[in-house]
Length: 201
View: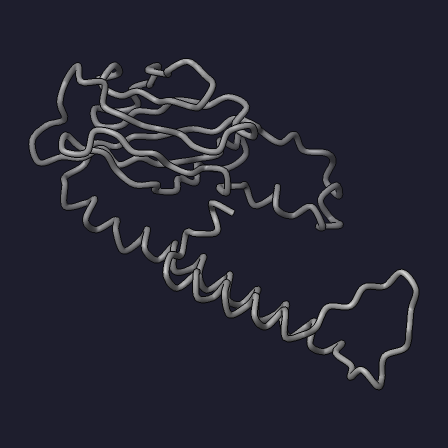
């Protein structure tokens, strides 16, 4: 089964070196993942998947001090033999915590720059059950973006002054508050039309 799947990362050779973990699970490692944005997982065509099954694709950052934390990305199947997954934003929590003043309290920990792609052969119904999970992830992105935008607008608005209250300050630029409101409304409209539009900004 190890030659059933392939992995393409832009600018690199095709990977087919999936390691069999169980009869229905395989794993491969992507080196130096910081420099890539997308990964393509596909069926090589050597052997089709068993009838009524799909290959669910997962993502994980290996950590020798913690159990794997697998995030579902989507699935491929005989009817859909390849898929492109955006992995640029799948950052580890501690990499997003650069402002944490306690990060060095226990010594400098080495950050792993490799990641893993896991493939699990599962009944087709499992892929259907996965759709709400992936949809919820998208909804979480939308909610986060909206809350962030609201926070930004409210923060900037708290510093608003009228023209009469303004004092000339050399070197300081001013932006009309209605410009920010217009940007916010446009961004929110685009977010409602396509929750993933920001990935192409």
